[in-house]
Amino acid sequence: MKKESSICFRASKELHDALLTVSREDRRSLSSTIGIILSDYLNQRKMPAEGVSEEKRQYPREALSLPAMINQPDTRQVGAAAISEISLGGLKIILSRELEERLAIEGPGSKFEVVFNLPSGNMPIRLSCESRCVVDSEDSVHIGASFVDADFQNYKALQAYLI
Image 1 (cartoon, one colour):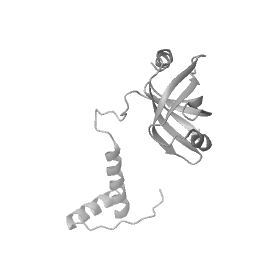
Image 2 (cartoon, helix red, strand yellow):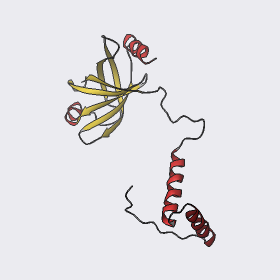
Image 3 (cartoon, helix red, strand yellow):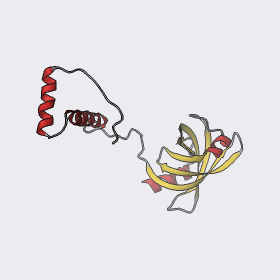
Image 4 (cartoon, rainbow, N blue to C red):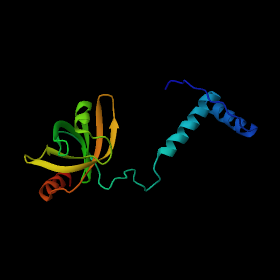
């Protein structure tokens, strides 16, 4: 990792001496020792507490890559997209910027329909969705969406695939 910034702070004599002792024992510079200690602390802060799942979604997601058709009834627009993740609660879609503008999916609450074939099936799955999160990337848009008013047969096929 490239070191591009310097951090200056005041410390007690006892803390300074303790850090010097540790750096000598580890045969490191004081600066390197402090950097390691700070990195370790930040990594520990990112870790979930023991026994707590990091996943906050109700249903676990499965990563995959499926072509899909997006239909937005309000604008009567249709276009091709890719599904990158799917669960019983929703999916993550990747759209080209051009298609996202045409469909006018501008944030949470946009409604659309997605049609796709599961890898294990030959029947098209058609589900109504509502966008929850829209994230721009360099050349595409990633949309997290939840299923709304799912047709029983389509949802049952999705459930059979995921469970």
